[in-house]
Length: 243
Length: 204
Image (tube, rainbow over all chains, first blue to last red):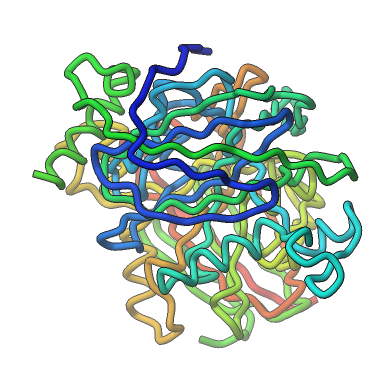
């Protein structure tokens, strides 16, 4: 587990991602995105697609098996299904982000937190992860076929010897920070809502601050590049693609 | 593409696609042991609905597929259930090998080697099901052992299957089955020797 403090940055832009909200945008190669939790117990589901050819997308399996890990932290990269790196986790104050748990759907959220409607709750209604991602996918001409297994930033799911999955309560505190450096032009989808294994019936997703900035070039001794021989080859594949 | 009973040998490195009607049984037999059978399922009537690894493992609270596991779709609906399993554990985190991931995992000059995704893509190209690379989410690897540790490590361990072991599933809706009998030559999980499997579809 690697813990490094966040560096001082000069944001190109900032935006507050409200608790329960969804978001999408494009982060280009050489840009970085910082996510800072403004309260405890955050979970931000994320999906990544190549902006050039969205059929190329984040692959949970390729990310985990290339790096022999079932959790993500600084030094890890997020692989596409084409042997390239969409983004690298360059800073992480948490130590464990979950790539296994997936998204809530509306039936799950309604059962756990009680049903809501726009007519009753207006923008305080509780939108689930699946539905949130379908909305953001649709903005790029994508849909259900493109909705793959996501990353849940700020959440930890430990797997015991028998394979049982254990969601970790109170994993990320206020101020938890993760920095993603984009190695390709990437469509980023975010959903700031509870992890599907979070049993709490209270709906309290904290706001998350997004900050984008211009990342320094990836050095030869970059911690993500040198984490394992596989990542070295992943960066070569990505650099050849962008050459 | 019929739903008539099937009894076929799928050689290593070959795909197989078929329909299993609701209530029918699909059996896969690991004929020589420790073979990985990369498998995806789709709603036979609507290919937008496909197997979901994260929904399946989260719903049962366990990352391993075994006897009793309900395979769920991206809409959290049941596709099939595992009703017999003489192997004991199957993987759904490791995904399928591809030419591109082989360059990352093993060496840049491995790109030419045959892979499961090549088999998947060829099988999709040969049918008019309207499916493409977009419809290749994370799959199941029957007979493959990919343990995760409490510290969050993941390894491709030696197989726990053996010659003659099988898994049998009952379809809970009409499903399209897409199999790649894995041709991987770089991974010790199959002793560097991919072998054939037997696929059976039958009424009960």
